[in-house]
Image 1 (cartoon, rainbow, N blue to C red):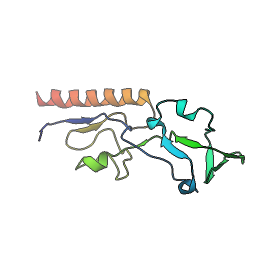
Image 2: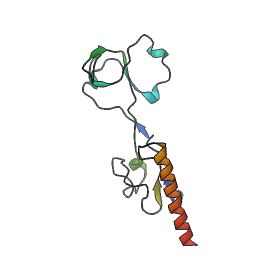
Image 3: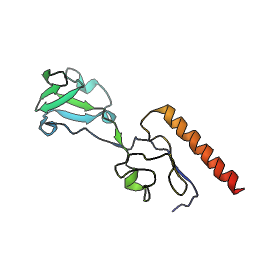
Length: 142
């Protein structure tokens, strides 16, 4: 066990990958993987792989534009879920139960950087805000 006056969570959204729920996915007869598990295109040579899925019917995929085609594999690049609520005991001042960020600054010295889903610019803004806040706290304690 460790003790600290401050805790900065800077792990970002890259916690737990997920595959989007969609109509018919359980009926697809081909391979379904996440992009994080994709290592090489060699395995997919001579196979049909295409994004923009609306619905799945066994080997047939219905796309947003209404086209229907048969495929051998689906590779999802659907992002990640924040799972801080699964391992941080007191997260309620900073995250909702579903992992949605409430604020970069929580209670009792808890801070977050990189959870806003708006990219590197917001991570930089979070980091600066955290550093400024900690500096203010430390100056007040001297």
